[in-house]
Length: 430
Ligand code: GLC
Image (cartoon, rainbow, N blue to C red; front, side, top):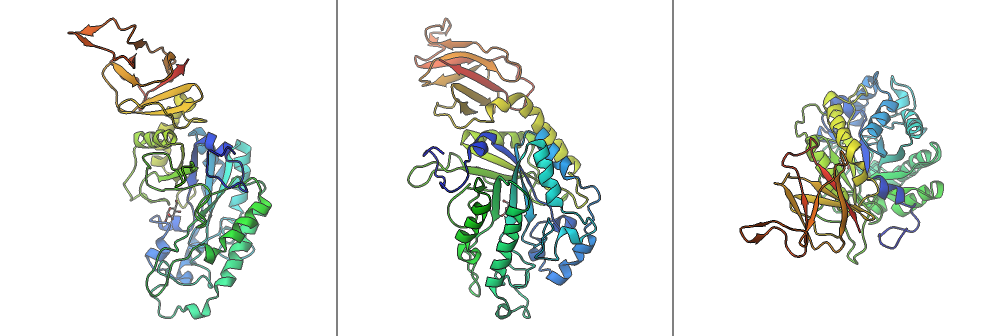
């Protein structure tokens, strides 16, 4: 891995990740039954005993992991990060260390195995999301985030965090030894900075993060990890937030980063959360992220029956419609050092610069301070040529005002915007 990136030598080679740029996040668990929020267990202060009722109710009769994987692939995603277990403690695989698992529900099968096999079938890179938090475990000590934080009878004196740590290690070992080659391990999350007075948040010492990291790398030496073990290394994962430029370390090395975004306002399925991002906004988020050397991990939350809802499918289909004509400007592309024209974003791949036109201008795009000559320009969606004018070639003066500045190149556009939400011009440079 080139020294360009701040990337641990002991982690896997992230070249595939930097190339693929676009992934699907899938949040699915018992919380999907309540169809509100994946934190519902603590938001509603539901005890483990009460929450176990959802184990009995969990019967996803429409779930087919291969349909999720095929849909992700069709929408242009190249990897999937799937919740093996969220904070609620429900394991989506046949873990021998808990009864709170999918094989103890009406579904009865090891869904994670089905998911992994479907990914391999479709050539999709495999990511495991895993929560270091587990509100169902009797030895996970109660803190300000815990569902029983206000329960007078729930006492930490009876809880031994070292027993929980062993449970965490045992389950992670199952995940990295039983399902073949895993490409990306996605922990969530460290909150050591939190302090409620009566309790403090949990961080790398609580998870024994260095040892946990080593356990994973021992069994999966090529794997990538995200940065939420609290070790300040790995893939940086800002969520529901769009950085305005590439991420760098204080020393100036590039960080590898991934924007994590939902379709509406929740990670799990919630038909009543109406903060839906339009497909235009999502396509622009993808472009903007890649223009800043990042990946977009776009979340979909299946219903409690296991299918993607209609609105999710509609949005994914619109994204597919754009990606099918413009993937050349996304996969393997990254930021450009050229000056970005007004109301556009630039991505670059070798000698190709891609101009993503966010707002359709009147007839011209002005390229300023381009240190290389534009050999040819075309629309990506139909390969139609775009006329390129320079100062020398400019034969048009409007009332003594030069149309083209001395160090400018002008692209001449049709008045009518092409029928794509973000038209893209591919520049071939000398
Ligand atoms: C936030 C949410 C968590 C979700 C994660 C995904 O941390 O609290 O539930 O899994 O984002 O990035």
